[in-house]
Image (cartoon, rainbow, N blue to C red):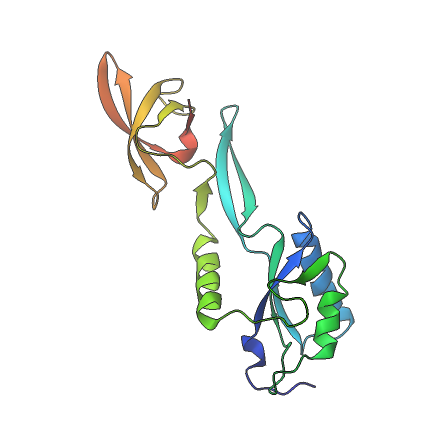
Length: 189
């Protein structure tokens, strides 16, 4: 069994075949159980965020990967003498779909603690929030896809990314009227 010194503080970015991130993660999680690797591999993540978009007038939510082609794993890979732990090295390298550790061919480098903290904070922050798939800019012409102003076009005057709301100037009875709409209620014209 490995030594207990900071072994859980080693997070690595692993390059995997594009489109296979979830499959590689699921395979690793299964193998952790079946090969009793729980003392070596602690967590395997595919960082994602929920995004929404409007297609044919309907709101759709989907999941989008932060880093396509990569997974993040907490692995006991370097011992207290900074030597590779063969058991965990081969566990990762022999997983179907894994190409290599990011940034290294034969000597993986763990992520810095502040990088890990930032990534984990970003994951927790975006867990429940739904982000619009399309980014809007001031002055964009948009079409309202839902609500009482459906089919109207307008110009984006303000953007509130925290709330996911746009202020759009819509022409109502010949006058430009500012209307607050959620991102999913509009689409680029």
